[in-house]
Length: 356
Image (tube, rainbow, N blue to C red):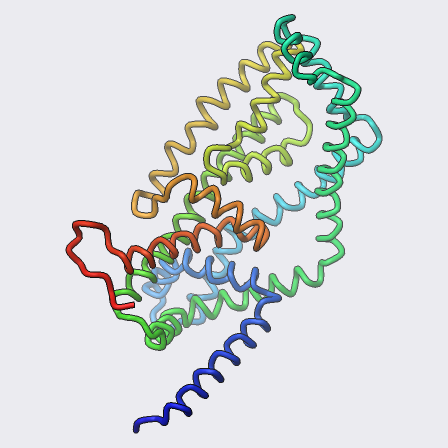
């Protein structure tokens, strides 16, 4: 039966209102929901293999997949988080007490520079050591205080964290068990052309898998290698520096070099020649090559986006959504590009643009 235009508009308005209201209810746990969806997408192939081994036992297969997910992903991340919290708090206490003075380290480096470099820095007013030490010490205190405060916040918000963690695991179980049925219902209810829906869903899942598998594995590998060489060289806080290198590895054109290069320069300026040489060679030929070797294998060419798009979308996503934004940002950017590709196909494709 044909609906009256007013009834149709009223129903669309009601649909929009209840959808926004439901989204507002879920927003408080958007991080847990998002990571539940991400983990479900990543572990769906494993769940299918579980179903092949135990057909008609969907609950048991979902539980086994969930257990493997916890062992492979969640438990290691929890252990790293605990170690990171302890080291960040210890470094903050040392900076606050004056045992760790970054300004003094800079003074040692400046004192070891050649005369012409020192004159150039003086010409640029960059060797006023008292002010430079004060600024660097202030920055170090603020940075370590931020890390320590985040650690304290995690401890104070333990209940909120546990609730979100429980929601993520609960949702992940049902997404693994009923994900195919839910995906079919969403696909049927989405008012788009079937070909457009297929391309957008394919792009979404591909970018999720590429971003998480590729970027996180590459970042984790670079961070682990950086933390290992820092531990071998006796640098304090190897877990903290390794996590920072892993974090910076998520940003194209920045990389882990922002951490290990200044340390190598400090070793060279203070006469620790072999430590500087070992760290430089390891950083260039081991840490630096991980990205070139692993990323093409894990990500592939289908999801390749320009580095500037990845950089801006990653930073913007993290500014808007927090740590989760390093995945959400590139996903939104990829969907944006996919939608515009569907709307305005590339020249020479021969396909007319869809009717707006």
